[in-house]
Length: 437
Image 1 (cartoon, rainbow, N blue to C red):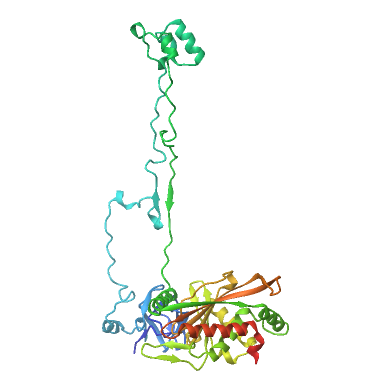
Image 2: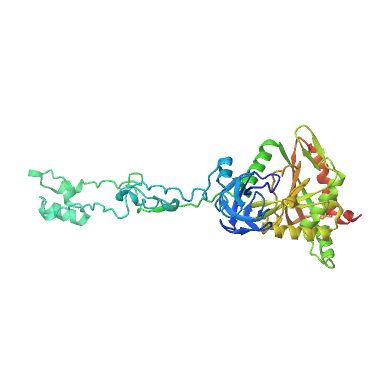
């Protein structure tokens, strides 16, 4: 008997999935466990397997399309079996069911309207100045100049005008029949040259540009990031606490540990370990807002924000306070690599009780982060910077500092609680040996 294959819920936050690729086509034989399709969820690309033997009779969703959870993806049954009653029951007729339907008639468009306007294809719109670049401009003929020989003037007036460089055509004669005489030349005052304000505006050449853009469909991951962080930012009253930490001892300790550690330990690994130890001493920060109650977690699961091409994933280091630094370093490296390959499983990104976001490797000295639900806090870690400070004896010395900013949900954590958390974290990072005691 034919059975419907539905979109499964592959993560706790998944509402719909996108078919990234089909590995079978209608008419193919399938067995239980065969890979049918790749499904892009809000967190990763997962594999959809068949759970029965038979023939793939129907595919209801094309590659690249989104389907709500429990939506019909395909039908598997006996070869030649009539599956249409199942579709009618679902109230859905997909591409396979309508394969023999009439083709939609094309709307007849006059030939002179079929061609797309220039620049409209692929989101491009021409933008031009008022005048077109090839538009012919009117060429004004030069002003006609009068020949001095044709102007009525006395010989003396001509001589004086020549010496002074005066154009007789610019003068008005006061003699008989408008004849220019000596007194007209001597009394002539040339018109003042126009000031900059009165000069005509400079004619700029016509420049034609083209606006263009790309539009990309929002991925399931980006939709979920946008929804969850918007909910967090606008529902949780954030406040921020920033502290500067001296990292000289942490740098020396890291160098010593890496001298014999099989796994390279990063500053981020040291911060994770220090945060886990600090949460053990400040359980009110290791908490979640649940609406009508606050959950104080006894276990410590640290979410580590990892930047991937489509956004941000947060794999979780479970029971981080109980793990040595070398273990944390190896686990972070493995999870970050699989996050970038989109191979993390949903359970590896769930259960965080506190989150760390580190942008120090990008040269960012200080920033604030949005709380990652359901956590009550997130720690933003900046880069280590060398600065000059006084040595207490009237001199100066170079030292290394790092700024961290704690974003707190004020419904759960008060300012004094957050400040005490940062004080403990500062003492552990400035004296790393205390984490081992």
